[in-house]
Amino acid sequence: MNYRYLPTTPEDKAEMLSFLGIESVEELFADIPESVRFKGSLQIPAALSEPDTVRHFTKLARKNVDASEYAYFLGAGIYDHYIPSTVNHVISRSEFYTAYTPYQPEISQGELQAIFEFQTMICELSGMEVANSSMYDGATAFAEAANLAVGGASGKNVVVSKAVHPEAREILLVNAKGQGYEVIEVDCKGGVTDLAALESAVNENTAAIMVQYPNFFGAIEDLASIEKIAHKQKGLFVVSSNPLALGVLQPPGAYNADIVVGEVQPLGIQMQLGGPSCGYFAVKEKLMRKIPGRIVGQTTDQEGKRGFVLTLQAREQHIRREKATSNICSNQALNALAASVAMSALGKTGVQEMARLNVQKTQYAIREIAKLADYSLVYHNPVFNEFVVKAPKAVAEVNRELLKRKIVGGYDLGRDYPELAGHMLLAVTEARTKEEIDALVQGLEEIGRG
Image (cartoon, one colour):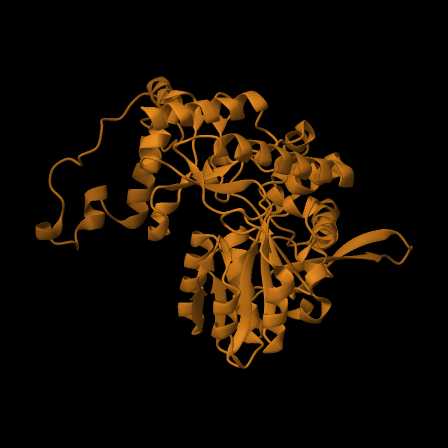
C-alpha cells in the first residue's frame, strides 16, 4: 500500500473503476479540456517518510518561543496566567474531551451540568442575571451583543469606543455590514473613552454604547458615567470585560449594564498560539430570550432528582430560522469547562487573590519603568494587567533585543493606533516573578542606552 493511513488496495481501486465503468482514474477527468489542465510538478517539497516528517516538524516546533522558557510581557487579549493542574486532568477525560455539543441533552447530564456551572460562575463574576453556555471567543461575543441590541431596537447604529480591542472592533464592523447597521467609533482621551465625544455621538438612533472594562490599554473606564449616557437615549449599555479583573473591580452589573461579554482565556485556558478560547455572554433577565446560543437550566425529574435541560435555544438549528436571534451553532464547551474547573479550584478568595497579584505586580513594573530615563508612561489612570510605555526606539527593535534576553516584549500599538507609533503595551500577570520584571526593566534600560 502506498499510503499507510489510506489503505486502498489495488483490488479496491479496480472494483471502484469497474463500478464506474471506466478503466483508469484519468478517465474521470476526460471532460476537462487539456488546455486548462496543469502540466508538470507542483512547486512543493518532496514527500518525506513518517519518521522524517516527525523529525522535520519537531525541529520547526523548537523554533517557537513559549512561556516555559521565556518571560511573557505580551498580552493584548491573550495572557500567560496560572492554571491549576486539575484543569488539564479534568478536560482530558474522554467523556468531556469528546463531548462536542449536547444534541441529546437528556443523556448528556454531565456536559449540561458543566455548562450550567459555567453559566452560574459567569453570572456571579459579571453581576448579571443570565448567561449562555459560551461563545467562540470574546470578540465574536462582542459583535453578537451589537446584533442583539440592534435587532430589538428602533435605532440602527452602535457607538463603540476606540479603547475597545482593535480586533473586536474589526469583527464588529464585519457583522454590521452583514446586518445592515452603522458602527460609530469614538476617540480616546488620556487612555480612556472621551466622554464628551461619546455623549455627542449618541442620539435616538443609537441602539447601544459599547465599551471595554478594563479597556485595551489596561485602563479602567468610568462605567457609571457611560451608563448614564447610554440609557439617557434608551440604548443598551454593553460592556466587554476581563473576568479575572472582576475579582477586584466592581462588576458591570453593578453599573446597570444590559449586556456583559468577554474572553474567558485568563481563567484556566492556555495561550495556545492565540486560540481557540472561549467567550462569555451575560444579560439582564429581560433580554434572556434574545441571547444567542443556548441556556442550560436546572430542574427535577419525576422522582425529584436534580437534572439539567436545555432551557432556551435561540439558534437557527433548533427553531424556525426567522425566529432565530443568531446563527451561532456551537459553543466552546471544553474551554468553558476548563474555565469552570479553574474557577472552582481557585474559589472566590483565590480568584480575588490572583487578581490582586496582577494589580500589585503591574504597579511594581510601572514604578520601576518610570525610573528609566529613556522611557515614559503615557497615561496615569488606574490599570489592570496592562499599561502603555513610550519607547526611545521602534517597538519592533526593542522587542527583538528583549527576545535575545529571553523576554517577550509588549504589543506595538502603532499597528492599530498611528498616533501611538513608538508606544508599547506591556502586560504583567501574577505569573511574572519579581526577577523577571527586574530583568525586563534592566533590558529596557540597556536597549535605551544602546
